[in-house]
Length: 202
Image (cartoon, rainbow, N blue to C red; front, side):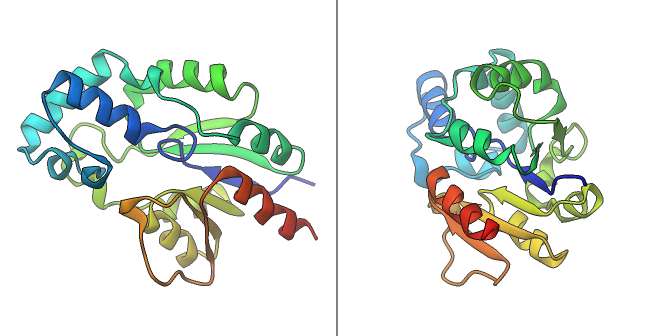
């Protein structure tokens, strides 16, 4: 019998992306943004035009700054524990052009854990300006997810809409919400995620 599928987000779930993004931006673009400013809509994060946000993001991609992002504490050990009973797949909003160094980073920090890395296509050329408005629910349904782990409530909410249990990862400014749907559980760390799945196994 096939193992149940867990679909896992990458940025701010497996990688400390906000921290790395802020450090690069403040060092290279003269900004003074903090975690409170961070948003996947980069025009909002920086307070600039879409064209300027695209220019800055291209600089970041060209320099492959995501190679320097730190992995989340305890994620590797918990994922190694989960892979015995689950199939693990990454679904990321990163652009496809980041594939080579993203895969290198994953192999460095999470070797042999994921059966696939899927790029959502939300921010590819031609649709980048509205990518932050899209959700992953249709992809969860198509891929046959049993569980989802993501740091954005909109993606966890879209999982709930297709009857997929999700974990809202972290306690970030962008995912604060007073009341979660029954199908969504917040876990502030990977050790809490392990506790969640220990309960599922009982």
